[in-house]
Amino acid sequence: MRSDRMKIVQGDITAEHVDAIVNAANRTLLGGGGVDGAIHRAAGPDLLAECRKIGGCETGEAVITEGYRIPAKWVIHTVGPVWRGGAHGEAELLASCYRNALRLASEHGVRTVAFPSISTGAYRYPVDEASQLAVCVVGEFLSADDTIAEVRFVCFDERTHNAYSKALREHVDAPSQSGVVPRNRDAG
Ligand code: AR6
Image: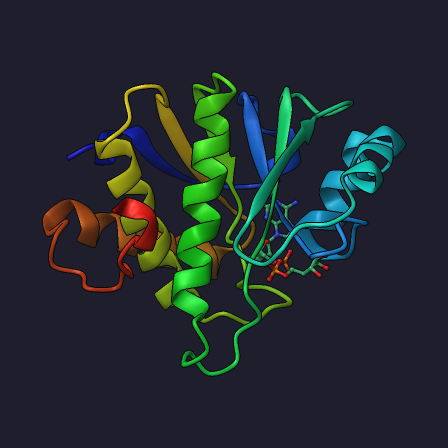
């Protein structure tokens, strides 16, 4: 079990001193509100220019850019699912966001990475379910990976912080009990 490599903190992800921060973007990659807006404001216009060249990103996928004016070297942009009641593949898509972001991080030699609470703002994914899924999927990835030393979940508000803290405690107590992690269809 690698839960010692997962940390929950409260704050603004743009100020994190890590190798990479993850952005909860939309499919245009051209910015928006929430954490996306905060990252673009902090990184500056060169980030938008690089995103424009990439041209977009599908839900559940991830792309990587430089961090420009923020402390992190990289920004990994992923597009979470919009919550539509839970029966539209939302969990599989959210799990893919975490897996694809971590795979890109690992490929770029990232040792420390910070995630926001993907999809639980404008996209309305319930935070209790999203936090359990995030902690389990990241825990599963770290068990099979030796390159990433630390994953931080950076929660903006207290309610989100409480949900992730509870999810991590439950994961440490019973890592295989959760049942919230959809199968990784790419695992072969
Ligand atoms: N640092 C960390 N977390 C933050 C920050 C910050 N600076 N600002 C907000 N959050 P959201 P989504 C939290 O809406 O649900 C955008 O317009 C926020 O409180 O940013 O995936 C995109 O362009 C919440 O807990 O992302 C898309 O159109 C979490 O980040 C859409 O919103 C996610 O909320 C994506 O929606």
